[in-house]
Image 1 (cartoon, rainbow, N blue to C red):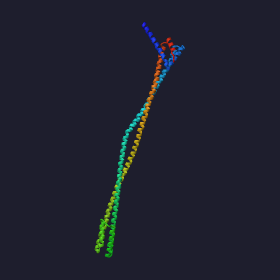
Image 2 (cartoon, helix red, strand yellow):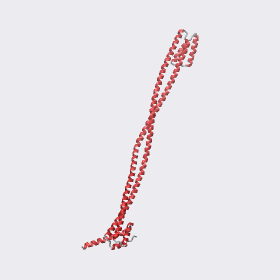
Image 3 (cartoon, helix red, strand yellow):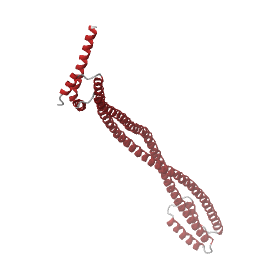
Image 4 (cartoon, one colour):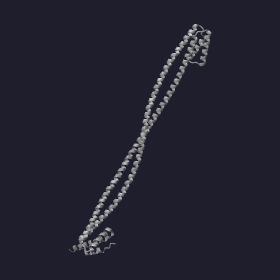
Length: 357
């Protein structure tokens, strides 16, 4: 029994010591000073312990409410911060995804652009070759026309010369008169055609023979020969006309083929150049998009980091306040335990002697 009584005394002394120590720590904080002032004021006025306990319970309720409000504010702020950070991160992810997609497309579009440009150059070159062919074809045809016209004029002159020689030889008059006129006509022909060729040689020989014609039989044979040569030249002119007409038709056919081909090429080139312009515009827009999304990602990354820093600082401050309120609640609860356990005169005296500093 003595041992049990001794232990009870020790426990009471220990509890009293702890109570004094607890009250001595109260002046160290504003909240503690408020509690100490409240307790000292109640005790100095002779208030009952129940009245002190009631005042302490009011302080406890207020601290509990503040703790709950701070905890709710902390949760709300954490939710807001998480939403802001998620929004910023989503914006970064979208910008990076769009940028990556644009960067993937750019080489493909650039490759297509180069292909279209090369196709346009090929068709341009082909069109130029056709133009060169057309120019050569036209120049060749003009040369043919000129040669044909010169040949036609030459043969026409031969026919005229033969016709006049035929008229002279067939005309009435003395042999001497015939010879004089034929000779003059021959000399005029030689002057106009100093170096005849082809039918011109035959014309020259007949004109020369007309000078030597003396008898009616010679004249008749000469006239027949001249007429035969005239007919032969006429036939040759017909054949050469047919040949030239065929050349003209062939020229027109080839020219139309080249013109039609160039029309098709020109349309293809125009279409390719339009596609090139469109692809170039696509490249400009994609490049701008890449730069824009790069800037967006950079801005949103800074925004995200700012939100993280701000939220961490706010959470730290709110947790510090929350922890302070938790400590206040614990302090009030400890004091309530002391008062509910009974307040000795010695403890009353010790409480009253504590200075608020």
